[in-house]
Image (cartoon, rainbow, N blue to C red; front, top):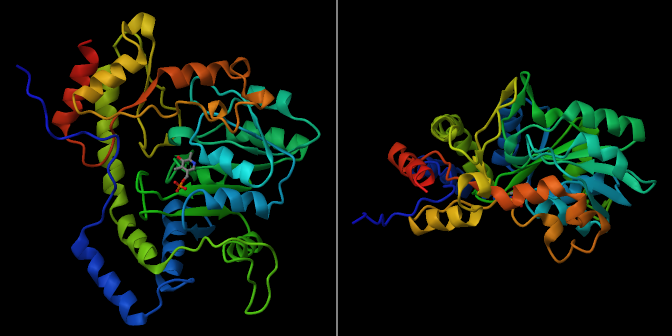
Length: 373
Ligand SMILES: *Cc1c(COP(=O)(O)O)cnc(C)c1O
């Protein structure tokens, strides 16, 4: 008889700072009675994140979707935006919410990121921007994308929701493009429960972003644009400051799990993993494996449900593709023939449990189940 474990192993677990360390922050907020609208902790967190991430201009948001929507507004993007179908729906939704037409381009099988070789063919006179995603925290080919953008006069907005603290050749990946955005949702490597941020490269743009996230107010009586309300409150900003003190430890724990998986699963026939890129400091936010049914002897879904029966909850990120959802599937660029690599990856992928509290025994059990098909 097998022991059926009662404890579920989830794909992620929020990095919750110790409660007793949070109480003093709350006391200060209660005493000051300043609970939102660019308070002390809000300003401190923006500064601390600039320091930690190695960027110059950051604006906090109430989640990771509104900075994408606001970035498109701030850069006055219209017409068509080239983007990836292999992401979380929020990427394309942000384009749609601005009345812009998304144009899907296929991805690179080595990274899951927008394939620079395919971008130019998708550019039309209506194209105004490219919105790539550093999916799973793997950097896009930012220099090649930059060259294309410059050649055609396009803006580049990176959805960097997975790329908190990722560096390439010693520099923050968030420096790439005109704007990058982060998500601090509970499921991400670093969280403020709900939250997000926008990174830009000039004081002038930061000012514009800060107006836009506060209804467009540029003073008591002046509204400069139809802005939105996307301010982060003091309680979550304080939580974020505290969580920042614990994030290095969390990333180190994620790294150990990642290395364990990589070593144990690298020889398994029919399972593919991404090769780490040269010169990249990763944040170990996801561990995707790709199941080739012929060679592995089981389909992705068979393995996914077999793990689930054992209480191990992987996630099929990103299945279905964004281009397969009802809103988008009628677009010409959404056809599977246009997206063969992304389509295959979406059918083969499982993201294995990966977080800072995952125990070695749990990782070993997951590996056993995957190996013993
Ligand atoms: C999580 C995520 C978002 C949205 O972030 P929220 O904070 O949940 O609004 C956007 N893009 C990608 C790729 C994400 O994974």
